[in-house]
Each structure stands twice: as C-alpha cells, then as structure tokens.
Image (cartoon, rainbow, N blue to C red; front, side, top):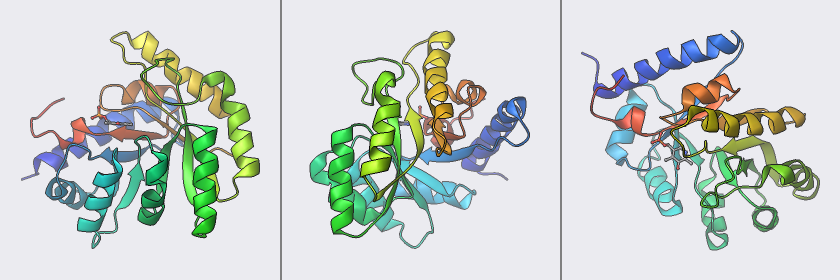
Length: 227
Ligand SMILES: *Cc1c(COP(=O)(O)O)cnc(C)c1O
C-alpha cells in the first residue's frame, strides 16, 4: 500500500503535469518541499517516497535538520528572511539555493562574507509583487536595476532568477496579478533560469503564469487525504 506521503506526492505530480502541459511539453517544474512544520522523521519519509529537495524558513531549523539528515543527499533550499548576523551560518550549510535575497544591502554583506570563505552561493532575488507591507522583497520597479547591480558587483553571488510569494488574497485575480508582474520582470532578465513561485494554495496559478519552481509545504506533508 502507498504511504500517505507517496499519495500526496503522486497527487501533486498529477496536478503539476496538467498545469505544465497547458504551458508546454518542455515546461519543467521543480518541486521544493517546504518542511518548516515537519520533523526530520517526516522529511525522511517524504525523501524515501522520492522527494529530494527540501526548503526551510529559519536558519536554526535548516542547520539542525540538515545536520540530522546529513546521510541523505538532500538538496536544501533556504526560503526565509536572512538576518545579517546569520549569514555565516547559511554559508556553512552550503544550500542548493537561497530563494529570498531581499535587499541590495544584504547582497553586499552576503557577497563580502562569501568572499572571505571563498564560497559561491546560488540565489534568487525576492520580488514584493503583491505590494504587501508585511512581505519582504524588492519593489517591482527596482528589481531590474538591483539584479544588474548584484550581477556586476557581487561576484560570489550566482543569481539564478526571481522568487515571489503570491498575494495573500482569496481573489484569484489578485494572486495571478502578483505572479504576472514577477514573470514580466523575469522575462527581461537574459541570464535568469529559475522562477520560484507558487505554494500549496496557488501553485497551479503560478505554473500557469510561468513558474518553474514551486515551494509546497502543507499539501505534501498533510496526513489527511486532500484533493
Ligand atoms: C511556508 C512557505 C511555503 C509553503 O507554504 P504551504 O502553503 O505550506 O505550501 C512556501 N514558501 C515560503 C517562503 C514559505 O514560507
């Protein structure tokens, strides 16, 4: 019998398959399982069901969980806001991708510390495309300039693209609008290859708007059967 997590993964694959084929056969979507509310045992079970990329929101959690699971070749992503005094911690964890680089100031500080440790980090620039004050991220008008600035001045940051969190709204059109704003900017960046948009409640909309990396937590880790 399939485990609950295998069923959750299969259901997600099926939904993604429909959404991505509506875009194009060549449109591939990566899944990052957000494990911020999950234990290391639950992560291990989902890993054994076939999921290899996991994301955390807090430095102390990614540090602890990646250490406890260091026997597994998990690709760790960091999706939370990074305080300056935690930069060295993140560098030492050597994440696959840091999704939430959210200011030029942080980029300069991160680059400086990467240079000292002689490390490179793949990052996405976080865009505040829902214009919500509670959310971090670069305002859409400033993204192109900030992106170029980091590319030119921060040689130890390897910028791969953009990330955004969809509008916190029941209105699908509002959510779609925030994704479209981010996609429009993404299309102007010749070197960008990753567009990280979409969570459990809005990943289908995000894929429709061009997302090629979704960050799904509750839908994968739920023990209830949901459709
Ligand atoms: C929690 C979180 C997610 C996943 O949210 P779910 O709704 O549980 O899928 C994705 N991205 C970020 C930045 C998060 O903090």
